[in-house]
Amino acid sequence: MTPTIQNPPAVPAKKKWSWRSRAFRGLVYQALALAMIALALWYLGHNTLINLRERGIQSGFDFLTQTAGFDIGESLFPFDASQPYWRAFLIGLSNTLRVALIGIVLATLIGTLVGVGRFSRNALVRGVCSAYVEIFRNIPILLQLLMWYLLFTEVLPAASEAWQVGSVFLSKGGINFPVPIWSSGHAWAAVGLLAGAIFAWFYRSRAVAHFEATGQLRSMVWLPLIFVLLGGLVGWLAGGAPTAMNSPMRGLFAIEKGGALTPEFIAVLLGLTAYTAAFIAEVVRAGIQSVALGQSEAAAALGLSRQQEMKLVMLPQALRVIIPPLTNQYLNLTKNSSLAVAIGYPDVVSISNTALNQTGRAVECISIVMVIYLSTSLLTSWLMSRYNARAAIKER
Image 1 (cartoon, rainbow, N blue to C red):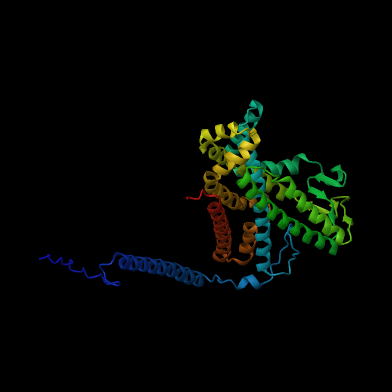
Image 2 (image 1 turned 180 degrees about the horizontal axis):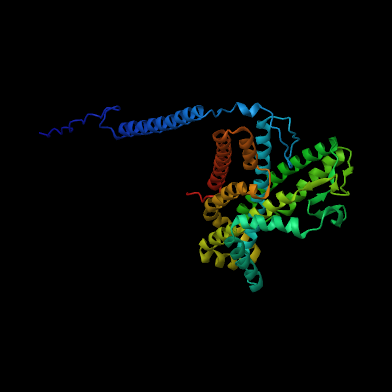
């Protein structure tokens, strides 16, 4: 007779909302923690409002709609003293983003070149790159900003004796240069540049796929650049090929007309770029050194030149190590731009200080600056994390 096999008794499943459930307890603890944080914030805010009211100090963000009453010496958009405070903060934000974005691009280019130069077989190139890193990395950024600013305001000649190269002037007042007089032809040129950039992106994607499939390398830089420039040229011609320029002229006390870069902007940009590029160079150097030596030997065995080895083998593999610390350097550059107030550049911190002194809304002005820097930092981190996910080595 075949024995009957009895199944073990079923273990009753734990109730989803039972206190014995670790997941449920975790949710309760998190909810309590959030409630305590919210209560602490409410208590601090309520206490602050009471103290301000007792001292007769006004509070609130209603001042943003009031007339600013001050001018801003440098802005991308028109601004005068009759406009409200919120527009002044917007001007300060645009000035901060302008120096941060341009600085990030320049610091990345210079830092990558210096970092790669540390591996050059030429002793002079290696020495210059090493000296650059050691000098600019070890001098405080505030001193570098002051150094560049004093270089422009003390060493360069006055506007009446400005150095001139063609239609470009260099003086204590900064750099003055010709700018096009805007017309519809420039809009067509911008459309052409955009179309050329889209075509260049499609071409480069196909070129990368072709290289991965066949090993045959096509132009990855110069040909896409030609497509972009050609698109802009076609758009410019289609718009009537406008050539009118607003050229600067030497005045009695200043250079008049044309475009201008103030010494404050140039000093901030050069200081932030030179300082951050030194750290980026070390990040690039460490990333390249993390790639196994066998990869370099394999590239040499395939007959790749030193330039091709660095561009096609070493740098792509080093990106997974480079991108996370590179994100930190981008964040540092953006936040270090707040030091521009020391040399009079009208960034968002400078505008906030002026608004604080006129309105007495210290908490509100500081809160606005904190939110701006927090938002830009989080956006930068999110973009770099997306790029890091694309550059990461995919597991099969």
